[in-house]
Image 1: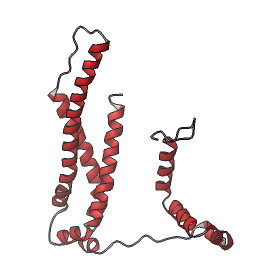
Image 2: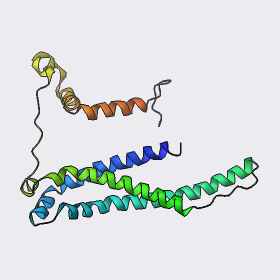
Image 3: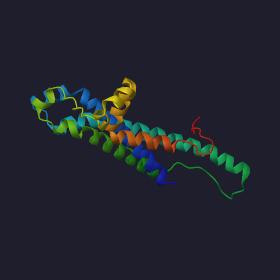
Image 4: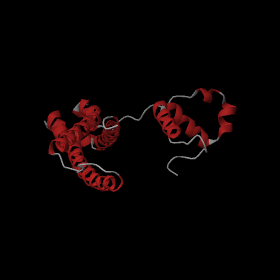
Length: 190
């Protein structure tokens, strides 16, 4: 549990930083292209954006370490009330805190770098232009006009989004399925 659960949370934080840095970099695409055209290297741009991720990793790791230490104090008091241990104390281990902080920064940097990967590969002139919108392809249901028109505009948009982004749709379906309670049909968090 002490290895598996933190890895899940670190992985989720890296994914969130990946999405966040991808969106930030895409919003600042023309600025990045201009800076690259003026001679800024990819390394310098990486250091700029890496500051966001490293700050998130350090602050999250530090706050998580402090919160963990203070919650361990409360758990130690509860253990003393219900159990008899010869010596039970909750100590702060700086080496463990620094190790956890290092792991937190590593995953934050990993998520940040993955989010910047696409934008830094672009040439300056290409980065200064707005991105080309993705080409919409015809769905197989659109080949049957009576059925397609009977669905209505809302369902047409939903089906287009599902079939044009199948990975996102699969992840959303799996997330919903994992959050559902099969005994009474309610979601776990309600």
